[in-house]
Amino acid sequence: MAEEPPIANVPAHVAIIMDGNGRWASRRGLPRAAGHRAGTQNIRPLLEAAAEFGVQYLTIWAFSTENWVRPKEEVGALMRLLLESLDRWLPELHEKGVRLLHIGNLDRLPLGLQDRIRQAIELTHSNNRITLTVAFDYGGRDELVRAVRRLIADGVQSADVTEDLIGSYLDTADLPEPDLVIRTANEFRTSNFMIWETAYSEYYISPVLWPDFDRAELYRALSDYSHRERRFGGLRPVSTSPHRQQ
Ligand code: FPP
Image (cartoon, rainbow, N blue to C red; front, side, top):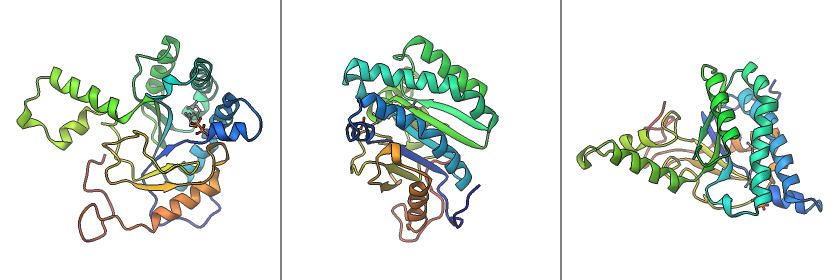
């Protein structure tokens, strides 16, 4: 259990752009896939720490719509890592009350992986300790394009288009907007991550490479967040977002 002083204002939804796996590997003279493997092993302890700190939704970005252009060995390694992780850890995650969700394109992934993801979502759908959303083949612009296509297919009239309606067509329709986005490996970019949902999110950039991002660094990020004043465009600090929340 948590041994650190409790944090007063824990963000309900933390999203992580897990960056730096490649650098972690190359600093050790290892292939990039070894960095992704180390990064994958880091997810379980971080999820547990997040749940203990009181985070209710953790979203991790594991494969972007732009990552397809990487060498096919690296793309294959990332697909295999997700499949292996689900095979290996799903029973334990389920037992610990973790609900799993996926955002992004499912239909471009290998069929076996699609099935496994669907099964994981189905199995864990009533769990409520923490929701782990895996963004896999996910990009913010792609998500918006797919949302607009569905909206048009549904015959929505222009006068009926509102921010809430657009939000309800996004992959994240069942999630509150992220309160805090953490990006590791000292990169100061959004890189097309949740470009609609993070309009009012706070950002924390960590110098630590993802495989080394540990409980203490997560605590540092959450503590830093707890001292921020969020005003959502107004003049006074607001404790919860006036925007779309669950
Ligand atoms: C960015 O690091 C990270 C990725 C493109 C993938 C993140 C994936 C994982 C942590 C593992 C797979 C996830 C699951 C859920 C099994 P980079 O390779 O761009 O690092 P670099 O900028 O140092 O090269």
